[in-house]
Length: 349
Image 1 (cartoon, rainbow, N blue to C red):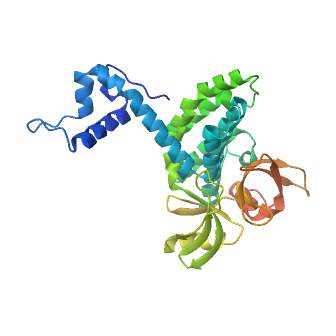
Image 2: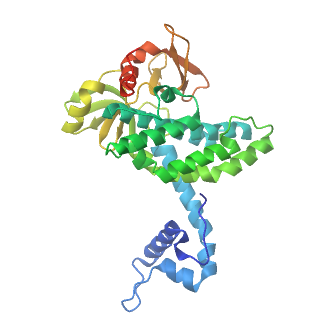
Image 3: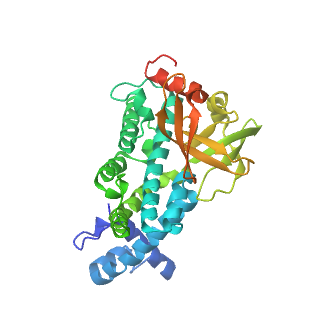
């Protein structure tokens, strides 16, 4: 997935050509115009000075990488932003850094999976084989990627272009599935040394950055905790965006149609919502939250696995920013779980 130039193909890297054109426009304060002929500066450079064209590529890739990292750390949903920021700026060893890269990768898939499941529940579309109810509560990253693909296919078959497909098109999802299988950095095998951890990071880093670049649509979604309504079309919510854990509470304006579609089902305390593509979905039980003892900090909790047998069944969550797991009584999510079961034609628990 690494960007590469081809000396025989000008179109090998369109984003680089656009960057070169922008550089010329900024420096020359206008477009290249030769007696009315207006060639692209990048094409002129590619044709007339291939060495210069190639030499500037490293400046482009460095600037692009820094832009991607800034976007992820400041604009992506908090779980992804938190782990990626620590991968870049908050590690004590390469072994720890490798774990943070894995956490970043898993968080990307967690958010996409939660979004897919949430929209499926919101749309109330009956689900058929090969997707099964138990698959939604898997602890397998590979299975979650498969779930995203299958939910997308089933919603698409109903004439719905789901939000998750707009963020992660089929080609990007296929690349993620291939990388998840082929990179040691994403396996749960333990690196045996600092040197091996560095090698695994080096092997996967560029691909992770390219996936994050492809998923720039994640900048446009909002993961929020519903607090109250100021009026019929204004929500008071806690926002989970960027790497900072500082509590951020804002008013969010919604449309009258969004209010009609989502108010009765989701607008109540304790709900975790995602605002995506003009729609509002409930993220429980895949994402919930936990406050600290004094209510100053809210931590997102990402579903990891099911535990126990009836009547003491529980859901286990990873608390973002804390090296601990947290369990919730499955009955706390009975409404959401039974709605999901209904999509598969199953009886309520």
